[in-house]
Amino acid sequence: MSTTTSNPTRTVLRAEGFSCPSCVSKIEKRVGRVDGVSNVKVHFASARIEVDHDPDVASVDQLVAAVAKAGYTARPTAF
Image (cartoon, rainbow, N blue to C red; front, side, top):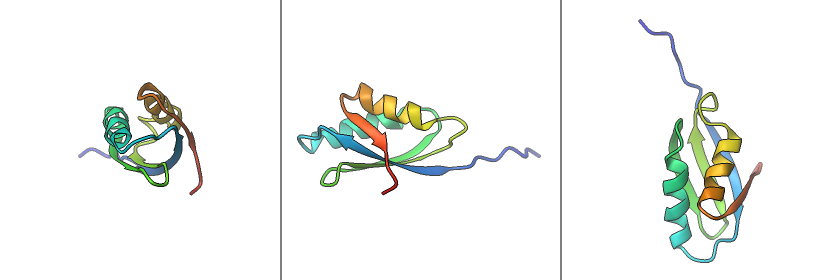
């Protein structure tokens, strides 16, 4: 029996530079490809990105970098 457990965490990022709703799918696809990410939800109106991930596999820095690869700036936020 395996005792390996994951510790999923929800990280909220605030993005800058959204100009159209197509930005949403672009970011969701890019961040969703990061290993350890189980769910990504981008809220266009508030520029908020909610990411469910295993912090042992995908760090917050990796999530921010994935958003940057999509062409946007993001930073962690408490809300």
